[in-house]
Image (cartoon, rainbow, N blue to C red; front, side, top):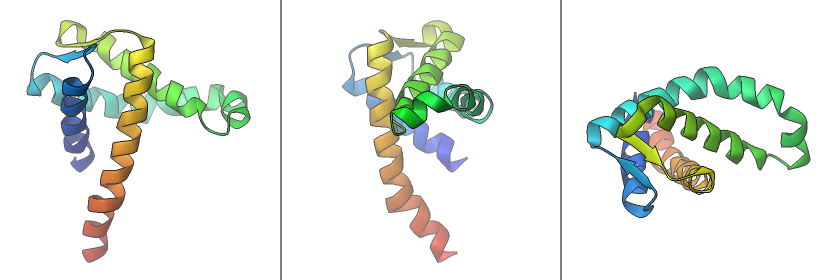
Length: 116
């Protein structure tokens, strides 16, 4: 659940940073975060398995493309509540999302887990 809240905050921050990404509100970002979590749990492993040779050849950089695809799928499922201007924007947003999610994971979530 912490990951969904973190993704919601990051998605709202990305909405303010990129002109081509738009959420209708905080609730839409939360629902998008939930849908993205489900897609990451169900669809992403299948995509990774199907594109394994390309992922290996690109030394894992193709995972950003897979993240962009799941982000585009989320926008497609949400309709007008979440809009992305194009695949290039989704790719840049997936890179930014991955970077900041890693920062939050290493700086906040893991230290909290270690304290318990």
